[in-house]
Image (cartoon, rainbow, N blue to C red; front, side):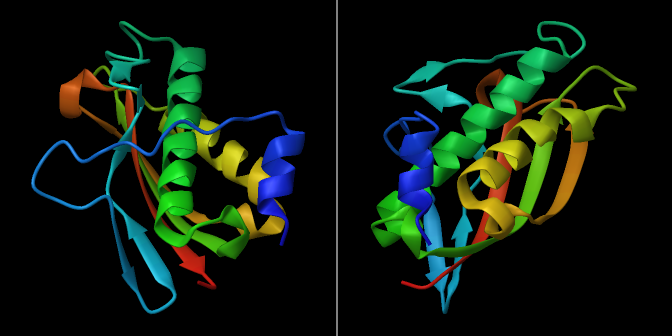
Length: 153
């Protein structure tokens, strides 16, 4: 599993793993499963995508926000186990889209995260998933994802 090499070949530099914004830890490992706390699209203290899809953001902005969330999640995975090469499989992605009432394209938004995981982890990046629209997210983030990962470390 050369996930780190694949990431480099994609010319992607992960941000620093985000720090918790409350009374929780960014990840918990139980056996070979790594449970990540919800990850928003904040990098280095700056919210890159803010506001509701269908209002402040269009579909493409939502997709990009989900990709940033996945990059943050990958950074947390690396921090937790030392290398993305220890990822055996992305098991589950739960995606939450801050959207206007009646928004029905959450799956297309969360594809931003799913596509990133597939690019980096190949078949091991294919996962089960939830994609739902919600009326609000922390700090008015456009997207939040929660990830469960199977690891070798």
